Amino acid sequence: MIGSVIISFFSVVANQAPTPAQEDSQALVSGAPLDNPNVAVHVVERKPFADRGRHELVLYPAAIQVNGKFTQHFGSAASYVYHLHENFALQLMGQYNWHSAESSFNQELVDKVREEAQAATSLLLVWALQAGVEVTPIYGKFAFLEGSLAHFSLVISAGVGVGSTRHQLHHEDVSGPSTFGDTGLRFVGSVGVGFRVQFGDRFALRLEVRDLAYTARVDKVNGCNSADLTAMNSQIEQGHPVTSAQVSSGCSVSSFSGTNNGYNLSDDVPLALNLVSTPSSDVLNNLGFYAGVSVLF
Image (tube, rainbow, N blue to C red; front, side, top):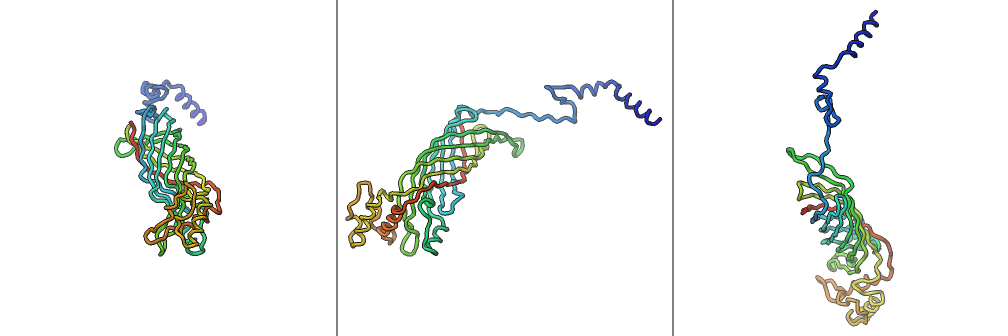
């Protein structure tokens, strides 16, 4: 008996016609019942401004190496980006490392065990110039402060170019300051990933990680090859000035002549000779964190 009553009750409810209020709550607007308080509709808006055809100037005041085991690099960089399409751009980037030296770990090796890293792992990058592309496959937005929106995008970049390198010859000690030898230009390639957060249609903040790779074989120091350095070292051993050696036209003998804060630069000759006499080949990866700001126009 009770079961029959319950079944009859639900039958009445099921067959009851909807009231006008219920019809309004189920009204569909673009496929969604907006008048129903139990329904939440999220709308993804288009970007209020387009990147296509725009120019972007980026300044990175801080470019810091984060994988410095044998080397330390601190520098700044700048880039020009032309947005060919909404998600694809061409990029030209220059970087200068105002501090490039061997790490304290390598200095500790020299002081304690009289060993140091090979040039293949301790070659220093002074500056680099690259051309490449930038892709932004993902973008979105978030709210900040009161009612303000910021637009962000995932940035993936790649480039190729050339860079200037040097190697530390003498480590600072009681005899004098640190000295460096120019080891010439190298091919440089890079890949990077990061975020660009855009405030309004003109200004943006960039946080990126870039990996700069360059070859590390050293066969010349200050333009002097093994034969040049051997000739200079022979003159030093005979008590003659280093400038009396017969060297090739590209060798900068003056780089090994004179003094620097009391340090005799000719003492760098045997250090440079040892460097080019036992060359080592490798590809160095300089992984850096880049923080910058940009303006679009």
